[in-house]
Image 1 (cartoon, rainbow, N blue to C red):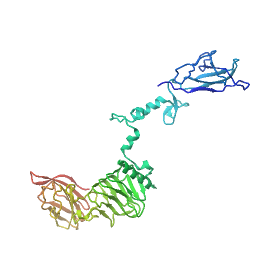
Image 2: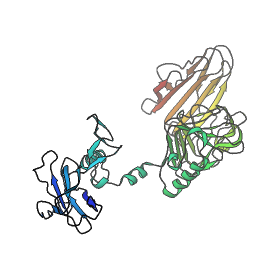
Image 3: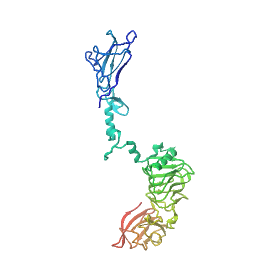
Image 4: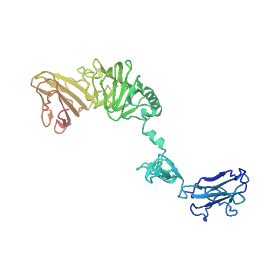
Length: 451
């Protein structure tokens, strides 16, 4: 870069008697070499040298002069009679062509120890080189390792998503972050950007309403927690076609509100609505139906409900009993409904007839059947029944020993697999079967021994 140097300015030299040193001379020499000469320039880019007069540089009638020098030098000021009236050492950056900086944000050489430290002496070129290496783009812009174009840093970060911290949220579990979340929801609605919840506990005192098609992602259900502190308010409200991932919604009090209210065709993945310290009257309300939740824990909802359209569920399932570590909710729209779900409670020696008591699974390719042993003592349960194999291509069979005894679930001939499910007390076995049209059987393709 071109030399950029500050001026050596004398703002009004005076003689020993106090009068203005009009027409005096300024001599520049290398420090320690009085017979040497240092050039003074008229501009900071050293385009033109100042004119020497009598071996020095002439002061004006006000005793003033402005010179640009690019090296440390000794300055001697004389009056018109050759009498010295001032002398001092003028220091500049030792590397001509670079501007010296002292900034706590950059590493430089310590003036005292000579070590590289934050805030030590460095140069502007070094600082700019560091920024360029970090950002990768020209003129302070960003270029990714696998990118080909320079982008504005602010725009790049903006497109990644919105965070509550951007609006002042603390996430410390103590500060009321309601105002920040209301601003976050408004910004999301206006921008359509995704929302990311960094690790933290976000205390709110009113329900937060987001728009449709919002995606809200946390770090984990144990790491990103929204806690309602108002006894008459719910947690969050999301519109149609929205997705929640890796977060928890809690209430710190006995709330009359709804933990999560959602619209049509929403999905929950790794979402918890729990009652670590309080309760919601309704954990999840999905009045429009069409909700898919996977790997979710919806617990502790005493006298609470999972507010799906109950007419879409087999009569044997109540909303509370469906609160497990995962669940599927089918819909009345056959173009969207993939899952049919039923629970059968069985006493000792009972029979589960998969498919025979479900009247609305036709046309849905996946049947999820839960079988629960409910009485104490050992027993055998035959799982079978008439199944429309043309429509039902996959069966998820969940066997849950809820009896306290040694239940064994023996499968009928329509199934082929590696063995009969035999979960221990309080445990589940989950088996996935796929229909083999050539063999005419449901073949076991995956099994979770205990979960």
